[in-house]
Image (cartoon, rainbow, N blue to C red):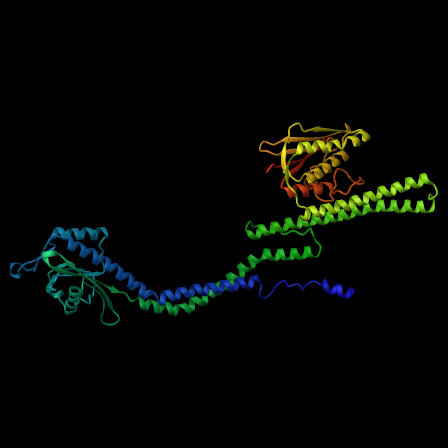
Length: 517
């Protein structure tokens, strides 16, 4: 049987450094995340760079073509053709209109840099253009920048005339012209109608850079970048995981020490993040567990003392009655009375423990009703008249105004008895203790029980309501230290505020505030 018990409580083996622990998971996550980011970079730089670049050029050219075509359509006569014999130029321009175009270009609303602009009339003959591409696959030009060029026959190339015809017939175009090698030129055109002056074709084109070659180079660099990035990721992940899990490791070791019975262990984590808050909560828990263990030890000492004394007396007097005084009625009765009294003490101790257990566990729920707590205090105070007359003390009741509260009357009566009994045990030399009821501004009442005894030390005040706790040099006094604990449990079940104010040498005031809703 003992062997079976040992097997049941056997502790699990300690694993200080699990292979698949949090640290390994962090390192794996960071490495996979780095690889994922690098994969995204490779995909965008090698697979989407060229399409995105072409889309950008097309959008830019379309916006310029639409703007220029709209200006031509809104103008009265941007271009007028005249006979060749009158001038070396085949066209006469409305320079006010084209000065407006140049102004828009200067403002950045029209951008012809690194672009080829071609405007032709309804006969598909060149009228005016802007040559900013060298070489230009449409006009077959090369050399330095020529700015605006008016009425030049050399721009009527076969490629250009074919594209003008597409625009004139279809109203727009979007084509790519391939040149020698890998050179390409994106062409966007639109037809502009100018009423009686006829239709014009507006065509813009731009060179498509060799972005694909850059993508190939990036693709070749990716393996090297992957190796370097993974190396840094592994090193960074190892350092970060070690730094991140160090406080968790401390918490784990501290938890094991607590499990082994060391309730004084604490964890030093200087950070203020979630782990730091966890460490603070652990330290608070350790303090509470340590205090609970101390209270448990005090319970064993107090209860064992309170049990030992009446049991010893009961046994001793019972043996005396049996062996010596059984035939002497007076002594026998006296000794039997002692046995009864000590039995009552034992019953009171057991009842207090059971009552505290039921209230603390929630088995006894308050049955709330509205009643006058001042009247209840008056009724409770009357029950102390005989005791006060016997002991020579005096209970003063101060409860002039009615105060309605919402609570369990039976539980409130127990609270009053506990507080008055506690005050009676610590009454001062004047022999006076007070029960006071004060109405609250927002409704409800504040109930105070005051004694003029020795008072409570400041270090004892935070624990005075804890179970089995004793202060004010209570060692040897009658009681188990459960009265205030039961009071605390009842008031907490009602949600009432409570506390104690005390000054050494002057006495103490125990109070609680009962609500009316």
